[in-house]
Amino acid sequence: MSARLRTISPIDGSVYVERELAGPERIERALAAASAAQIGWRATPLSERIEVVHRTVEVMNAQADEIGVELAWQMGRPVAYGPKEIRGGFAERALAMAAMAPAALADLGVHWDGPTPVQERLAEGTPATEQRAGAGQPRRRVRPLPIGVVLVLAPWNYPFLTAVNAVVPALLAGNAVLLKHSDQTPLAAERLERALRDAGLPDGVLQALHLSHAAVAAVIGDERVGYVHFTGSVAGGRAVKRAAAERFIEVGLELGGKDPAYVRADAELEHAATNLVDGAYFNSGQSCCGIERIYVQRAVMEPFLERFVHHARSLVLGDPRDPGTTMGPMARAAGAELARAHVAQAVAAGARTLLRPSDVPGGREGTAYLAPQALVDVTPDMRVMREETFGPVVGIVAVDDDEAALRAMNDSRYGLTASIWTRDLDAALRLGGRVATGTCYANRCDYLDPLLAWTGVKDSGRGVSLSHLGFAPFTRPMSFLLQEPGSP
Image (tube, rainbow, N blue to C red; front, top):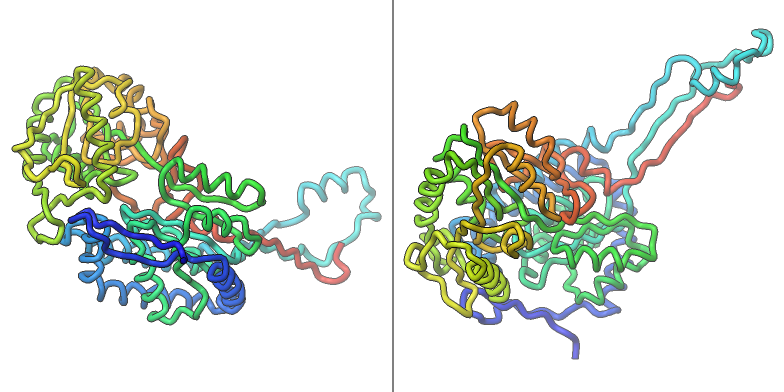
């Protein structure tokens, strides 16, 4: 009997999706089909590839409400927000990458007037009569070519937003894609496969596969796969690197975060508190770039806390199918238990909670329903300040000045994003340049701008997606030197 995946809904603990995992024969068919289809797809004009992306966005937008319900059942996202992942971020990123593709995928012409420095060096001391008269400089080109077959491993927390970061540039560059989503959101992979097919993508160019961990490792080890893009945990990233270790292929890793925010004394406190509540608790805190640590200049600590707690109390925790719910259950009960453990350990060590159970009712022990929490009197050695909680929990610490804030922000093995809240944007730029992070925001957080490179440092990963740089991982450079006959 074939192995199967079972998606347990956080809403009620029922089995919402059940699928057969791909075995060796199915995997072989998929790899063979991808390799064959990629040959024709790479020959398809870029303008036609771009049109497929545009039509895919239209198809997905039309299905956004249905997808929102599926997300609620699969991972607990409230239906008030699920469709926005499609009509908002997915569409924005896909269309932005399509707009950047012509320039990003164009030949790079290398122009040099006169002899190269090497030629000049060789000519030194040579009599003019012996120097050959050239028939013109050669034409030089560097052309970005597709890798071939790309494996995209996408997580459950933002299943479409994380997938679009890799799938769209990979397809635009002329690659075929094998897409594997988390067992928590398998319908996301199937939805995207159908949408692309309905938009005119040829058969075999993108295929959704449901794979076990062992099967993922086997696919990574197959010589037909030329690049792997993984979004997920640090442990998952290490497993992907190990699977690829015997092959000379690149691996892109978008991993975890313990993202800090710094509220300066000159910040607009109402704006900062409102947005940091959203940054800490949206999607039940299950965001790699969500806010998990907040540092506040001591002079404004109390007024900031008053505003933060006030806005946190406005959250409505409940059934994600209810349009009035603003905070659904976490995707998995195990994730909620980890967050509860972080809070319990901190409180046992002297931390204080700012939110009572009655402030945001609906949390239930032993389930995925977890109310938001904020902690003060936390110390850097506590798990809640060091490990990725990946839940609706944030630690808030008073600091004396910019230097103390910078030391605290950098005291982490992660470096995905950071935010600085201040009216002085020059100060934000100056301080941000000293934070070990991939992205620094001023007066904003928990957002990916598709025009900017999305990258991390330290244990937050390696590689880059989005922006014009986001095409490079899915291409390989090929150089051309075209010289006229008889030229030196």
